[in-house]
Image 1 (cartoon, rainbow, N blue to C red):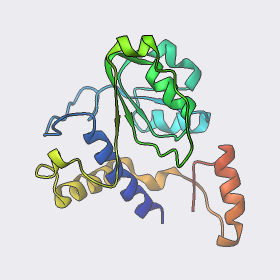
Image 2: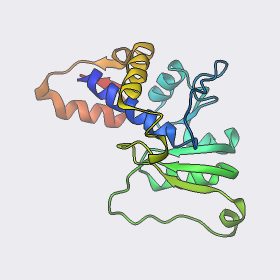
Image 3: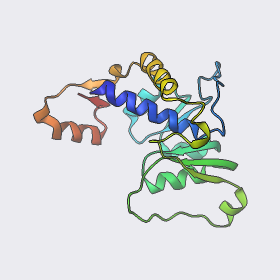
Length: 186
């Protein structure tokens, strides 16, 4: 159900965030939340509203990236090669792009010419199903689950349910989600 998906997503999010630092120690900041200033880009306005409500510092349409950046770190999770190019283009010189998406067997084309070469940007992949080797001693399964449950209590993923449908309406649920007409359906 939704709770199981939320727990899995939150744990994967922790693994992804560990890609941001060489060591993910107890460095929680109070003024701007756990991760500092977070800007989310989303095509669907209803999801932007949810991102804002859940604490994102900025929730913007992708076309606004150039006005909000450049960013020290960009995380690309959509699996869309245009989003990856946008992340690269909107990362500050010396910054990092974390690629958590999977593009399947598709070949993608990126502009990695002179501007990219001179920018000293780093592109790093993150496999969210495992903890990076250098963090395994700091982030035991018990510690990850403890933080995951704390995030579930804080974020209340059940509040995201926008509609309930029966199993025989699964196709309709997928269509509504794809169109952005619903946030979460059970």
